[in-house]
Length: 395
Figure 1 (cartoon, one colour):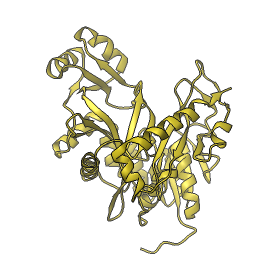
Figure 2 (tube, rainbow, N blue to C red; figure 1 turned 180 degrees about the horizontal axis):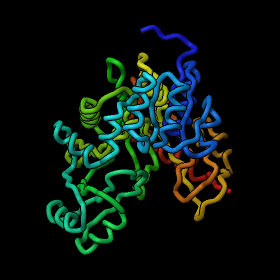
Figure 3 (tube, helix red, strand yellow; figure 1 turned 90 degrees about the vertical axis):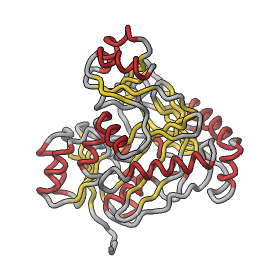
Figure 4 (cartoon, one colour; figure 1 turned 90 degrees about the horizontal axis):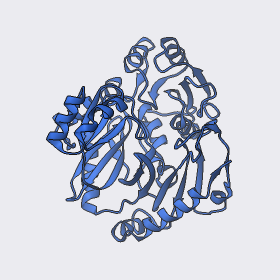
């Protein structure tokens, strides 16, 4: 294909922090971005070419978006898949990843069924419609994680259950159709950011994720595990892409078990929080890769530049209030640190407000590979990133 700049205009359903960073990555490529989001002056609005204010299932808003762009994508699973497909057909636009992929992934039960049927390794699971189903899952699997089939994120919609007497309360807490998944005795959580291009697949090195209260706190590159585990994680991520349709970036969350096996936890059909490290830490960020992929352009390099740690900046307030982050000099004064502010007007408890990235010395070809064996440098970087992140205060 022949690529020229200025390039096409990309329509993005969703204007949160992912839409913001997509627009930032698209601009140097000569690609303009128009976002659709129900929140006026959403986080992506200051850096996008335009915003259409509308719900994620608003036909007229979708048509207005389609009339202004040359291709469509989405940055949130709440996007209406059927509406995306029909509007893309009406305006003769490509939409990537494919709406059918979005339909599969947005329902965790269907997602797991299709992965399992394709031979992709997943934890044991079963459908749960009521408390009796949940008690049966506890009897079959032992301790389980009850997950809302749709709509859950950042731990919302996930309820750990160990006692059959808690079944009714757990069902009520999830608040809708659910699935029960056997607890995995994992060594660590990993994620692979995988990119499906027009005729090729590229994967970033697996990152090691640290969660607390079901919310991602840090991602560490290189992951502190063995080369065999890293190779297996990469292979499983590629197997996952083989079950999905359409181009784009996919965040694939994985469990590394105590015996070195890899199981798929969840998939996001979009750039992912655990891939934010790629902005400073990789040759080409996940956001630029997504823009390239959905437009059918050649993909960039996924090589690791240097050891990197990303730390999320979460709301540390007890009640919602206007967002104002202080002591930012803790990041600005550090030569190895970078701050990304998401532009949200309101800070809430544990809401993702931004992230900090800390990079180390070395390259993917030499020092970073040796670091994966020793584990010393990632640990030092993790402590450094936490120190800087924890020095930030909401005023």
